[in-house]
Length: 190
Image (cartoon, rainbow, N blue to C red; front, side, top):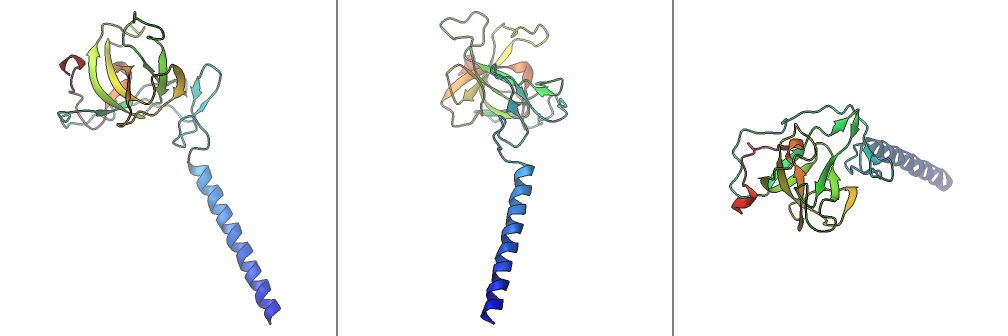
């Protein structure tokens, strides 16, 4: 009788382990970091040494799709979303720069300090019309100062957070207010 109980108990443990393994495999295939550049289970990954990123998906652009009717609160930072960065089903991302002008002073002043992918949130401190169109004649000249995790030149995908201690500049053509009307402070007012 004891031998039969041991065999049944062993079979029960084997079945439970098999089920747990299957559940873990299914959950892993549905999302999680999985070592991709996006970090949200979005299928994004760096594809070459230049830091180009490619993401699975259709890449539909939704300009201003996050804009809300509510007035922006009086003090920032304010949440914005990166939009319109897909080109030929590949997320090119939005570069964060040290400077918002064409002729910045100092070494690495016009260098990128990372990038954010489409539909990712960035935290904006203020905006400024610098007169620089980012090399895009149809994109305007407004830049947004965002909270950023680093001030070191790089082409890595980064995540903007309210607690970041550095700032960087992002081209306004590719940012949409998230949950507010976008009427925020100019940098000269701060």
